[in-house]
Image (cartoon, rainbow, N blue to C red; front, side, top):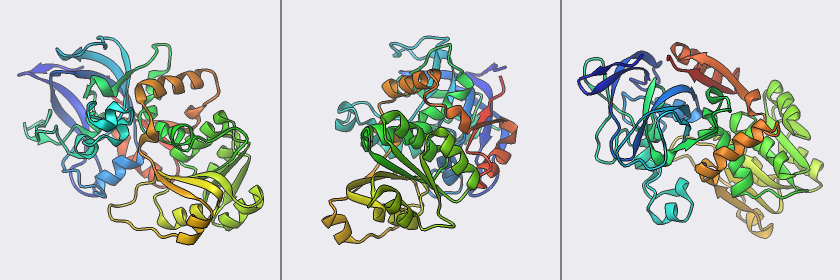
Length: 376
């Protein structure tokens, strides 16, 4: 239970204290919500690849920090400027956006002009923190405007998405990032068309979300490429019509054979430049590939310019599936409840104190989408 202590509430949090080191689960404190902030009792939070690459400092988020950006929980307190959310509402926490720059106003919050500072800055835009450790020392926070590896998290009203109370709240956190990214890339960014062909390079949580979305979108040839047989088997159960183990078979040749020349759409979610190069070569004429895999900053990839030019092919960088979360997350919940988007097949639950086991299982490919249950 949370207690109020000199204006702060006591929480339990997983802290990334040093580059590449295990998370430490420890007591901490969080301040009350201000302005348009909401304080959320986190029921569960997905553990995403981005949490791990920040822990390992691929992105320069200052440490020590409380990470976590796929939280789901119940609103416990609201700031004075909150308009629509109420105490007791069930919410999924998603990425942060300013809400007023040209990208945000145009419905493209994932490309907010302040995206990196808001989501990866380690504090608010003034450099202030809402979290302290047990010794009163600041902890870097505001990760994706939530830092949800904690029993309580602060978000803003515009990144706390209300969801139906009859939906399984502890399952829904991954909709805020990884699942939204894969599904949104198919539906919003690439606009995969009925009767088309689609290939997912990578069959992790993001890749398999794209496979399920391609099925929903009406693609009739859906190809999953990976090196883990179990993931490929699951891809077939979730909607893939073909799978390619790229450890045994050249995926470019295989895709050209399956499609009769090349795929209409593809998504690269591994963050490996060599895989991206294969994905580009696997495109048919006028084909498009989306890129969502995040390697270390400064990573370069190459492609044959004439192949891109003469085939009319295109490469598209994608953040958060080009989603408007307030609209798309409830749509994904409805698809799940209808049995058309069974993303629960990707999930394995862990208590927060086993976060390092979850991270290791994710890195080794044992678990597709770890979800951490927070102490209540």
